[in-house]
Length: 537
Image 1 (tube, rainbow, N blue to C red):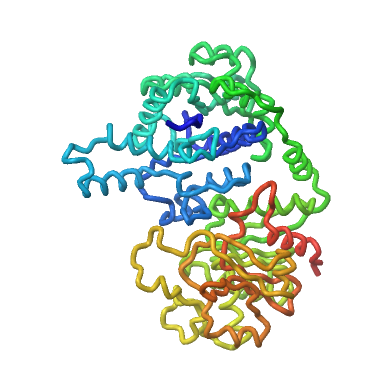
Image 2: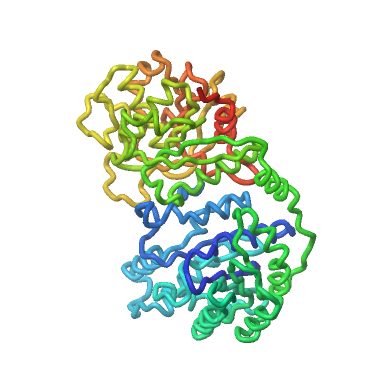
C-alpha cells in the first residue's frame, strides 16, 4: 500500500467552476509547506486522450515531457507547481476501457464476465495510485472531470468511494466544489443547489470533507453555518471562493480561507512550516502593477475559444511580469486576413505570434500576416505551424517558389519546403502517433536564438508530423533565413530566424508548454521585450 495521502476534488451544480485552479492552488499551498505534491486529472470522455479532439471541443491539448497528449488542466498544474507532469497525470474513461478490453482479449480475466464493478473500478483505482506508488510524492490530488450526477462520471465516483474505504479516512480527503448562485431579485445567495449536489454525492456513498463555494458575493457566517449543518461538514470546512481577477490570485485567497490547514488536519499531517509564498506574491505584485503595456497580436484559427491557446496566453502573462509589462493580446482570426486588409489587421501591434494548428483552413491568412511583419520589421514569433508558415512565406516571396507549400496542405506542390517526417509516412492511425514530447536541440552559436537561451543545448516539447525539408536548407540560408536550432539525432530544423530583421524567430516545438510562474520561458520573455522596444510608425 502506498504511503501517499489522497485528495479527491469533485464538482457540482455546473461545470467550469474551476476545479483545476482550486486543485492547483491547494497543491501550491501544500508544496509551500514542504510537501511533495502532484495532481492528476480523471476525464470521463471515451476518447483515449484529447489528441484527436478539435480545440473547439476541449480547448488546448497539453503535451507532457513523456509525450502524453493531455487535458489543458495539466498546464495549470505545471505552471503553479513548477513540477513536470506525465502520462500518469491524465486518465480518461477511454484509456481505462481500452486497458480492460485488451486484458479481456488476452484472457487475463480467466473467462470471467467483465463488468464495470469490479473490473473498470479496479483499473481506475490502480491508475489513481500509480503516482502514489512511485514514492516521489507525499500527497496526490485527483481532480474528477465533469459534475456529480453525470452518468459518465459514476465509475470514477464509485472508485473514490472504494478507495476511501480501503485506504482509511485519515489517508483521504474529498473536496466538493460547488456554486452559490446570487439572485439579484431577492439580493441573496442561494444554498439549495449546493445542498442538492452534496445530497447526490452522498447517495453515491461519498461524504465531502470540504465544500469550496464559488460565489460572486461574500459568503456570510450565517450562510456558512447553514451549508455546514445541512451538508454535514465542519463550519471551518465551508470555504469561500470569490470570483478573482486572475487565476494567480486563487492560492492567496485559499490561504486566507485556510483550505490547506483544514486539509492537513483531515489527513492528520503536520503543518511543517508556514507557507513560503514570497516569490508568488512578488509575481502578483508585478502582474497587477505593470510599468509598461504592449499590444501583441495572436493570429490563429480557433481564436473564438481562448482556451485553444491557453498555454500561449499564460506564457505571455509570465513574460509580461518578467518585463514588468501588461501584455494586451489582440485575438485575430487568420481566416479573416488577406492581402487587402492585413495592414489594417496588424495596425498598432508591437509584436505578432502566429499560433500552432493543423489543416489548411486559415493558413493563407497566416502567410499574409508573416509577409507583412517580415517586410515591416515587426517582432515575430511563429510556433509549430506558425514556424512552417514562415518558411512557406519566405519560399514564395523571397526565393520565388510561388507554389511553395507544406505537403500537408498541397501534396502536389513542386516545392515542398515543409514535408511529412520520414518516420510518419507509414502511419495511418491519428491518436498518439505524432512526434510527441521532449527532444533535444543544439543551438547555433552567434545567433539571436543563442542570445535568447544563453546556452547551446536545450530540450523542448513537440507535437507535429511535418518538418522543414532539408533539401531546401542551403537556398534558405543563402537568402537570409537561417537554421539556428537543430535536433542532433535527426538533423531536424527546430528553429529558424531571419538575419536582417529586428526579431523574427520560428520554432517547430511548443515553448509555451514549459513556461511557469517561477520560470517564464526565455523565448516569450525576449519576444515581449523586443515588442516593447518596437516603435509604431
